[in-house]
Length: 100
Image (cartoon, rainbow, N blue to C red; front, top):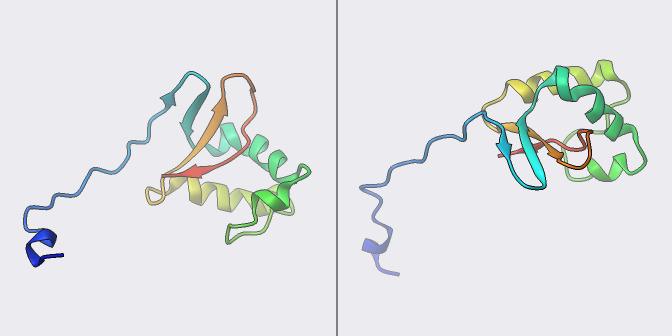
């Protein structure tokens, strides 16, 4: 690789993702909202397989909503990462939190 292949003199960063709902045929990605998504996300964390959903995260599955709420509030208020909740257009409950 030549040195001029890595010339970043004119590099311009990209804008951050917008906090907006993205609609698709099979799913909708909504900005994380503790009031709207919190109860369903907590229920998903408590359902069978909850440990697997937290396997690669730095946090353990929450023991109760009082433990989960501060995490949810921080995640919803963050711009980096920007957290969203994916919703199936065929299933009415939140199952996951994703970041972008």
